[in-house]
Amino acid sequence: MALKNGKWVWFNGEFVPWEEAVVHVGVHALHYGSSVFEGIRAYGTANGPAVFCLEQHLDRLYGSCRIYRMEIPYPKEELRRAILELVAKNGHRSCYIRPLVFRGLGSFSLDPRRDCPVEVAILTIEWGAYLGKEALEQGVDVCVSTWFRMAPNTYPALAKAGGHYTNSQLIAMEAKDRGFAEGIALDVFGYVSEGSGENIFIVQEGTLYTPPLFSSILGGVTRRCVISLAGDLGIPVREEPISRERLYLADEAIFTGTAAEITPIRSVDGIPVGGGKRGPITARLQEEFFGIVRGEIPDRHGWLAPVG
Picture (cartoon, one colour):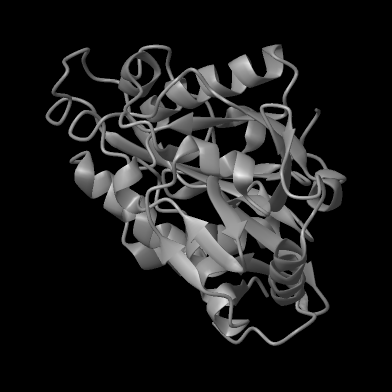
């Protein structure tokens, strides 16, 4: 799928043309995956574009850097301002925003802190529904992957780091090769963890369940928003380990994430989830979510940062 990129990139404190935002082939991140990043969306509203959960994404970005001992050479407020200015400068009505922090050129040491500078780039692209526009209503067919998520005390699951996504690539490629839209990974104890790039919820008897943070999941920003929306709607939420077979017994199942937004899961391993279509709780959550981000209903949680 061809993506329309913005004309400008914020790169180490300056706006530079997209074509000039380049790095050397010797940068540390290219060889060792020493980068952290965020995926953020700006949505079009009647009052212009607004960035969704900007503060929460920046908090996670700085937290990921803290885990990996990468000191961002800019205060959080400067990156916040740069993101809003970049969306405006690129003339987007809506877009996907990718802040990237990475270790640059200096050495090939596995301790790069002394020799490799920490660099920062922010780029924007115009990107629709990650799993397809029709998937938001019809759902997607997924499989349980043969690839597991990381064990505790191997990789820090709460850091959104570039190197972690080699595992996600294996999950996604395996799913596509088997004819599925996406894969679900289990943790090392055999419980449901997450998709290759999404958190997961299931619905059973009117209650929303999601794996806890200790199931090697990324602490998703959209995941937290869905939990909040469920509370608003009076839908009980429980964070607890989910066994694989509960995926087959669920009344509904949902992927959540900045890219995936709120996407229903239609089947798992060829077994229909509930009625094999979007369920009523998923529909209610979608209605609230998209109503807020598009400015159609009040932003009662303060999730939107206006660009203008």
